[in-house]
Amino acid sequence: DYKNEEATREVFTEDGWLKTGDLGTIDANGFIYIRGRSKTMILSSNGQNIFPEEIESKLNNMPFVLESLIIERNKKLVALVYPDYESLDSLGLNTPENLKTVMDENLKNLNKLVGNYEQVSKIQLYPTEFEKTPKKSIKRFLYNSITEE
Image 1 (tube, rainbow, N blue to C red):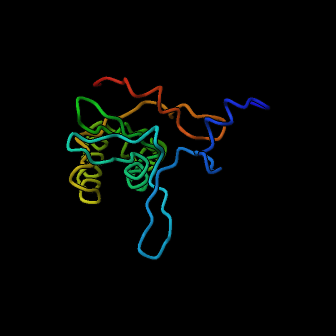
Image 2 (cartoon, rainbow, N blue to C red; image 1 turned 135 degrees about the vertical axis):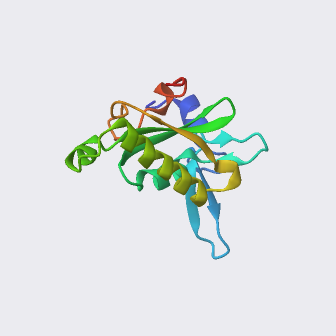
Image 3 (cartoon, helix red, strand yellow; image 1 turned 45 degrees about the vertical axis):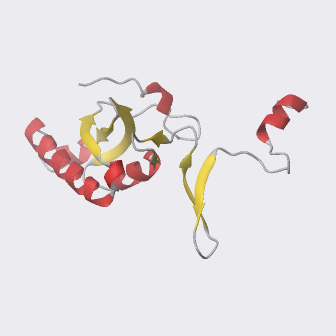
């Protein structure tokens, strides 16, 4: 808020750094890598930090996945996926059986690319695009309580 000293104090550290909410790592060469956001990080049962954005990035590059969202359900990671129905239709592959086969393969391949603590237990299809903010980020908070299909 403009000219609100209390709000200003909340978003800056004592030494003047802006608290962005981004979490990252610094490699041996001093390069900074943004891993995710503090508000979206999931803490695994063994204390590992899971950054859903990293998993989603890998999944979004797989066949027939337009967008995805990683959520935690019963201490397991679940991927909500909005499939690329248009591509499936154009190739004559848009049947429940084909979609299940493709997504099962995607799940298998995804779990080869992520750490043991980041394993996704299932892909759940989502029927529509995810609701977005004006800057085109998915409104994650709307989907955290999605139940089994």
